[in-house]
Picture: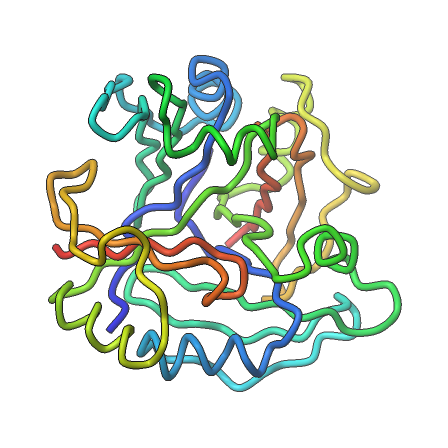
Length: 134
Length: 134
């Protein structure tokens, strides 16, 4: 079921400082910041040869990463996104195995305009997993 | 400086259960467990098309992931490893920019038999970064 690692998401309290670290200190190519109000985040992509890192900063009052940053004020690795070919088939197989899909269980349109789902970290050893249909 | 994401490491309290999740529930190819006493971990590799996940379970009394699991008993994302061409050049550039290298500052031989260094998570927005010379 799991395909490529589409991205690893890192939540940070200060997107400008984090972008500067990855660009200037670590010497990586970074995108311009993109505000995604419907997702409650501003994102910068760190482009690597085989995958990308998403630096996420909260945007707005109900950001889905606010609670994570309250618990981890310095920031930290937030989730990992795997590509799947068929997100509904993946969801149904996972649900039949007892894994919990967050929210309504219906895919939403993710930050890349593709259907995504999140799986409960308690079912995956503390890791928040995003599935994205590509 | 940063090259490919070599792996994302996930610390887990029960390697057998985590391996079963990735193999059976998530449908990924997984390796046999490998005990690495000199690194204080037992590792299973989850092989994906563009990178790999390393599932880590503590091994022995002084495991470097014991403190992380004490803080995160269910497990969690532990570090991300980037490939670099020249680890000494990378270290010197990072140090000149004020970033702290963990330990003695000299590369050690990592789990893949290649020279590795770890960077202080406080200098990188809460993310523990491993650099591996490939």
